[in-house]
Amino acid sequence: MSGEDDSSGWQLTESDPSVFTELLKSLGVPLVVDDLYSLDSGALSTFQPIHALIFLFKWVGSSAEPSSGGQYDLEFPGFFAHQVVNNACATLAVMNAIGNIPDLPKGVQLSDLINFTVGMDPQTRGMVITSADWLREAHNALSPPSAISLEGLGLPKTTEEAYHFIVYLPYMGSVYELDGLKDSPVQHGPYEEKGEGWLAKAREVIEARIATYPPGSLEFSLLALHDDPLPTLQTSLSEAQASGNHAAVEEIMVRLANENSKRERWAFENSLRRHNYVGFIHALLSAMGKAGALDKAKEDAQAKMQERIAKRKEKGEAAMDED
Image (cartoon, rainbow, N blue to C red; front, top):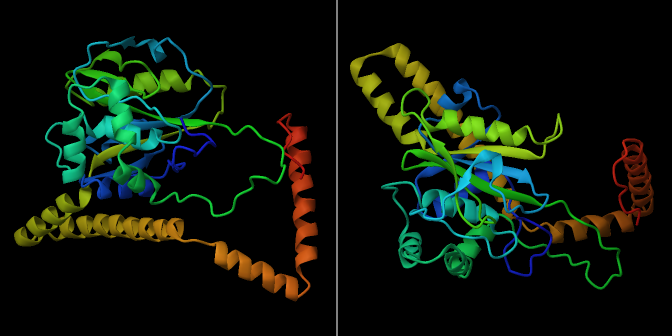
């Protein structure tokens, strides 16, 4: 679960493929993450082979019952860790996924950490994982703590909506749901190897879960954890060029260009996440004050805030603080 308490030292993580892909890179794992906007076979085939699905949803409280008709597997032999601190659920979801992918290359620190936790119960494993300073630093790399503190200002406390990451993946012929806030992994039954394989079963489970939300709800997102397509595309391009298949060469070059363009965009977005904007904001406000434009900007901002509050009240939503 991700909430507003950052006393554990773990910061909130965006549900963004560039953030997760950068985390995997720092862990020495050659996989990437992409957004899934649909669960139909066409959307899923774009990223095959898919090793796991990372599901983000609005957390409304824990339940002792397994979700979507599954059954707790108290004897789950794979890797499963509990979430023992706030805001660590993104990295816990990644760990619970990559810890169950066979023959997956990993960085030395990650391999040592996973091997060290062999035989531990989920609670102890979760404590060991979240106690790893290097892992927390990797988690926080693209979500640095705020340099501006509102503590001690006497502002009213507000309740932040909490969101939570979990994982769906295949393991020993069944689809499992790994939720660090649950006592045990949830088994959702076996899947057929033919056709879409485990993804067909996972689609049923996820769609059933989404159906429990009010119609039109947008309190969730889905990410696909899959092989990096760049090495395969580069190999295919070399083979097509060697065989003189010009049509295939053109098609692969377009796909390579699109993938490289996406990586460049991810790198730029992540550079913005790493940047500290406090100095820039201070300089901007100082310049506006000297130019006599700060009071007008403040009045305009307050007017816009009042408009937003009025619109939310019209929709029956909870009013925002007007301070």
